[in-house]
Length: 405
Image: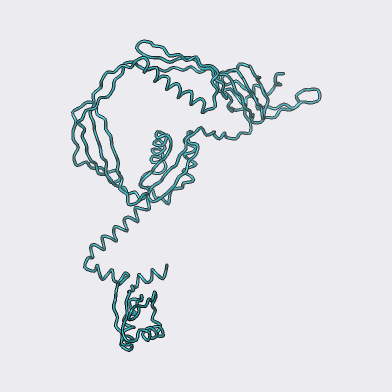
């Protein structure tokens, strides 16, 4: 590679020699250490590559061997400079353009976030641009590992995240899910009820159980105490230790569900009088040559952003926006009872699905759909079996007494 670069810098040619004694000529230049390469025989001589400065050194040997030469092509920087010596401004502009592109390549000009949920992805992108990596940040100041850790901490709905710097773009790959939150390790603490419930299942791994299966508990009640009792031979407490309680506790809870759909609603009716405009931008500076006006009160605006780029991931800090504005009127429409019922059923199925994703068991479903005051209303009670334990600071409530038998 280095040899090819040096040949380009100093220049080289592809030439042909032909005449009376081609073999003698080749012997003469080789014995005088004139470098040639890629030698190929022709009908009356040889064809090869050699350095630009070797032409003058070959002339005496051409005359001695009664040979002639023919230059087929010239390569390298000296020949390019000679070719464009009358286009100085063009060459200077080209070099300046390369310098500007190199400087722009040192910064991030685009942040992209991929994810299953577009709302989550858009929220993450705005958070990143606002707090962590604003457009125009030096790439050398960005730590993908640190950014990944920060996003996992700030967004509970993210189960997996990976960041990649490529070209002038930062790409963040997301996977959403119910990832278990990392609980901060404590030296001591109680397990308490997160809501009112009736205990259905209880597994104690560490600590002293305070309640039993089928007991009714209120939100905040201690379920597993972080106080451990040590007994003597007479079954009397001689020592207590404080630890961090640990266990799995499930209980039946009640969930009040309510949703409604108005039978009368307004629907957008679009007209064919859309107006379009184009806006050019450089960083945060925008200019719109012509912005058509609309007299309508209700307008939907759709904007499509086109950012300039040279390659797939080499974005530049300028481009244009295409804006389409479409007026509409509101038309009163009425849902039929069956249509409204289907909408409510679809929403309710989505709610049930979210419970199942959280591994919440639905024991009883008492939700009904009825018509009330021009609305279809879905309401009722769901009986659930779900985890109800959460870690809290250690309480002194049970530290001085033994657990119930």
